[in-house]
Length: 100
Image 1 (cartoon, one colour):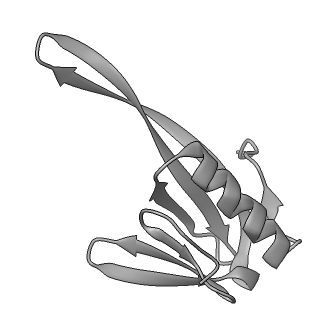
Image 2 (cartoon, rainbow, N blue to C red):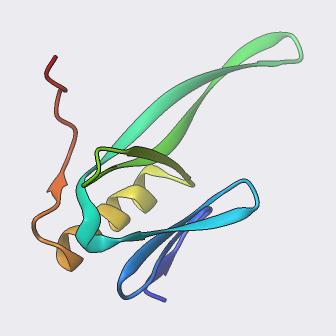
């Protein structure tokens, strides 16, 4: 195994992610685009409201499917993106605005 995070594992030829109780497999050569997504989550704690950031790895597959995977931190996603780029240099790394 190359790298393992909360619900994401990088193997020699595939990226694995966990959704529910099942692990899913994504071959590196089928991933066309990948980027970091940060979502703000508001939570009520006792007598105040706190903000938390959740970090996700988002990948787009050849078939057009978009998959969002939860990660433990921004650094974890950046490391995964770097590994993805090394495994398959044709993967577009970074967010780009979708055209309508």
